[in-house]
Length: 289
Image 1: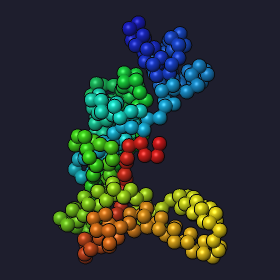
Image 2: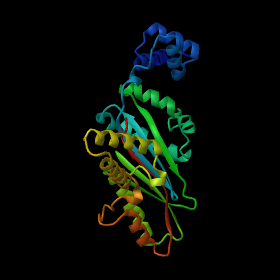
Image 3: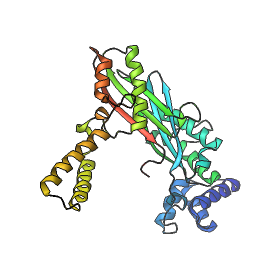
Image 4: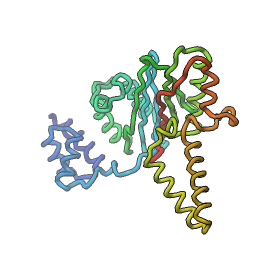
């Protein structure tokens, strides 16, 4: 490695970890200039307890969608501040990453090691961007929907550019025939999911751990009320049913006509053409962090 390249790598490692020049140079020499391995080695040596920037929470950023021939990918890239999320380099990186995620069918290991337009692989550019911008930048999650035998839809809420924003949805339907009315329904369902944030398709798909936790919270809340145990039990059942109704897509009130349930709207739109929701994914920047 040339002296200029060595100094560049040492500088990047110092900016990312906060560790001194000598220790950074030593691990760079040991790893042949590999930044990720150098960070790991510093931690193993106890010199860097944790990657300094990586300890900070990155809950801003962008969601990007890429589409081709009925297949879709969606990726969430995080930064620490909204200011950086508006940075042209950050947007360009996220946009290219979205296409790379698509090309690799959402397989994150392959995505991270895929060469970008500058010939560097994704994870190297991620480190470079973190070093240059001065904030923690992470690829939080991604997903891929194949268009084979399925009718897929996407929706981006208030995009800053085409298919780039803060809240994105992918939806996959199984249909006998992709009629115009069903295509319109798919678009509306995607918008509904963005607005109503369901966590599963139906009751049977609901994570039982979430349901158990919700029951515990409701029961504890009602115990403190001092009401008769039998009345408490009835109220608890009602609250659980309400929770299921509000958080499962098919049982939610249709956002465009709240007097109807989503499952009824789907049945009406399909007629003799059977429609099944295969899956949906909703990415909102920073949600859950």
